[in-house]
Image 1 (cartoon, rainbow over the protein chains, first blue to last red):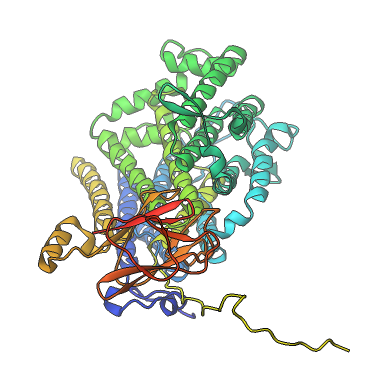
Image 2: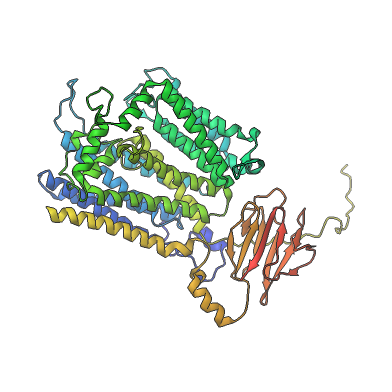
Length: 490
Length: 148
């Protein structure tokens, strides 16, 4: 095991246990993955060159080195996959590499635009692209570590309740801690500050709670499919089985009230509903859940001013352009998207400095401006391919826990993209959530790389050739066995 | 400048198309059906053989309803054990519940000493029994059948 396993061969353990003939050996398709990764790295390097050209900065060999370093980073991730999950899906990692790389280029581009800006409080812009590169490195380390230390995703099911408890604590912790550890940044209380590091525990809680819910639903699935009363052509669940749904709803409302974080609460509740739906295949759960969420949202809108603000900004951002906490952000983002039009302004030729929070929540608006509708649509398709492959792995894996977890993880990324892009394009109220892999933010990147590792692990389990178990030697039934006299020990 | 702008977008779309090509070529490999499982291939294969040999196992009732396993001549183990071919998540199934195996051109089902028994149609399986096409085999709450 000293060197990475070459293409077309399984890990030694798998090849011993299978007795397929050599001609029937399932392809690992790692070569395809490497080619696609190189393509992604080439695109990212080209994007960087375009940015530097359009910003009229001197081009040097340094850019090529950066591109090569980027390829090297992902080549390491690729080797980790070869070694520890040789049958993993070949399309997932290249999609992630492209998204992360384009995110880095755009963050660097926003750094260039804001260079030398002096803010109202006298501070100057602090470039963040380099920090994000370091976070990417740490993220890929976590990715490799997850693959190494989790040889089988079913191991997670054993710690379901522990994960659930830790996830719940992590989710709610910033909301209840005092302000000096958990400061309120941009109106949301979702950060933990430990020394110089700021963490967003909610990002990790997302994965932990998904593991918990998948394990919980697998062990208690029969309970949720017990039919109750029939109503409007749907089998409603019994009232006593609604407990978990109400619990999830309560947590969602707590997040909304304590942390003022609408995006996370929406994401969390959506994940719970989809897992319930995948487990039971019954639309009644979704209808009930959406009803509960709608009710909660209306009550929150009546009670809390920050929710009212978001809704008013969504209904008419331009009318509230000058109001403090008004529609300025969304208006600027819409102006940016309009400037981009069909073909975009070109990378590095837009005006991203006009949009506040351009490198986190509104990064998709910057991409929409510089790459236009055509480029933005391509980017959404890359997300789609990612989610598609995740769901494919979930469908073909053979254990129920893997199916639920894989489906939940793939859906979570999709739904997060929907929430943030929907907010930026004024389809739904803006809720302030990161775009997976694109936005600046260490916690989000780390959590999403762990998520990718889990998806690869599940797809590897689904695609690996099935092991043929040797039938146990049949023992005669206990009644047929002859009795043996045993001496009583003295 | 316009050229580079359009060029980048073209390359971006080429990436998407390449990714979709990978997905397409992978579609059948990952679903448990091999390349011979493609509808077009299967028809020609069937007409060449001219027989109605079972080609797949389908779960018709229970939690795994809709699951298909293509039959390639290797025996199929059914039970709650992780290494079974069909892993049941069913309180009424045993760890190693039943085995389907091929002898000649026919498939036989045998019970591996399960607690609640295996039923072929209505009959309890005590010795290996030949499984005709489309006959339900009941294992706990799960029902499977062979299809061509």
